[in-house]
Length: 415
Image 1 (tube, rainbow, N blue to C red):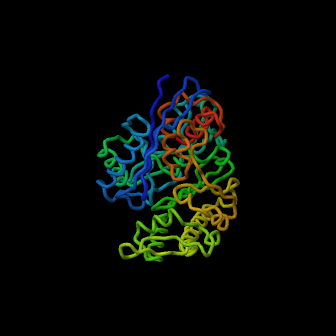
Image 2: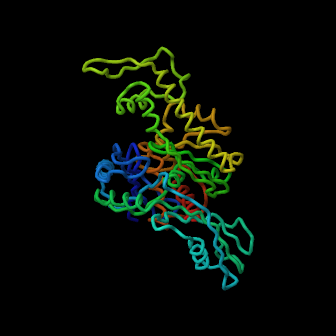
Image 3: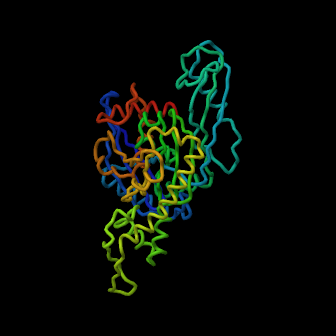
């Protein structure tokens, strides 16, 4: 069977990442998603995940995609593109329909989805997702797939996600000007969950915390439902600003210092360790204690994680997170971040790294900052190649058939 190409585009506030993969195989058991290429570029024209300069954003997209295409040796024209930011709103909606026959048909499910989606949406907002959470047949709940069941009344609980129309249009316009098409806009925390979370974690309860450049996204799953979704207007750029001000550094130099020598827990470094940076005048150098840099980072990251903990507590699911907290995004690569998070949350914490079960150049995406782009590829694989989605519900593992089956179950429930 001819392989199908799929590409995911993550336009963040600090970096733009692209992953290109192919989906190939003639049976579900032998199907495989192979990573072919990865590209990234410094983002220009994005602030808190919203386009503020179309030309700069377009150039970032073009550079990242071209780099991925060069690595993959193939070209793409459609990109599954992530969207996030403070403009994202989510709410639950409920739909009820009468079943004409004693057996529930797929058409009945479509009707109840339409009823649940029929809510007033302002003209300045766009529907991004209507995610089925649960079905009820004659008041019996906990049903994931009602087709074929006997009943006279079908209800659906749907999670509605909307975004600002202007934000969506500007992303589409930037991608179009770069020479590509937006296959679909996908909420980035949802995409990231595809690449770093398992079925079991979503079932027993887990909070995914995406530490991005401009924002921090929080999404909570329990019983395989999205229970909470929120965005905090602070991220890695906030930390970099603190370093620039606290250590009297240019922003670019502060970002470099954070990436090379930054730690989230100052007590993890030797108090006598220093690093060298350029001085004010040409040819001059400065030496800064790494512990001092760690103190600046720790204070801000501790504040951000404290705000995340507050969101988790307000959601009402703080005591239902059996799988704990999963950190992903660029900020999750910061040395000491797990130790700092474990001090904040009364739950186990791990780092969410994509690439489990993927073939090809999967080693090139095994970093938290590629979680969203990889999740967009997995989302696109399900959209483009539904025939590969065989039975079963295992997540991860060496066989890609298991990953595809997990995606089938998860996306069938949610999209």
